[in-house]
Image (cartoon, rainbow, N blue to C red; front, side, top):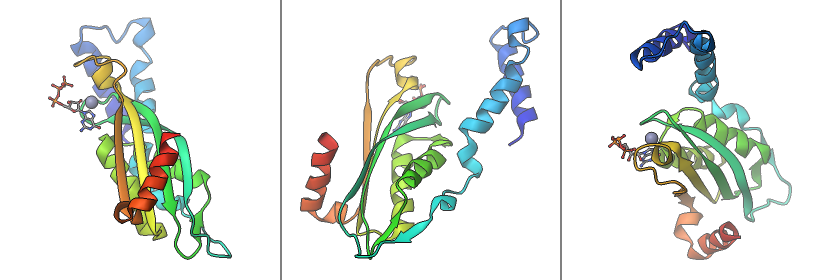
Length: 186
Ligand SMILES: Nc1nc2c(ncn2[C@@H]2O[C@H](COP(=O)(O)OP(=O)(O)OP(=O)(O)O)[C@@H](O)[C@H]2O)c(=O)[nH]1
Ligand SMILES: [Zn+2]
């Protein structure tokens, strides 16, 4: 990431809003913001495949695995303001092919740390798990508050956006989907 370029741009923004980038409190701000962008957009250059340490579980575990309340911090690509919430992931492995539970949080983080829209983020996580684990089914749910909708614009404080992406048997089998929905509602 080109930190110097971000620094210059932030300085320009400060000037454009009528601030003095030389005053004491703002002197280090362009550099801080550049480092912040490198952190919150680090997903642009990290490959989620690094988190795919696959285990083959003896006994072919093919029951539902549900990881809920994974913290989610992303940035909406329309306003570059945060959207913050939780991600829940349910999947049914195929042929005992599973990954460590913490890897779901790492995968979520990798896709979240990019300029995003919530729908695409939800689909990307589901597609990644489907393509790489080949599970019988996977469901990804995200609920988030978009600061662009609450601290500005519509100022709809408290509005929560929920999105889902269902793949495989989560989409095709009503019984499985209902089981997941029940867990989700808990
Ligand atoms: N579908 C979707 N929309 C989003 C997301 N994040 C932000 N938005 C919306 O993106 C839209 C951008 O709308 P525009 O009309 O181009 O921009 P704007 O004039 O700033 O719109 P307002 O936010 O309504 O003031 C807004 O309605 C936002 O609420 C997201 O993750 N998904
Ligand atoms: Zn926005």
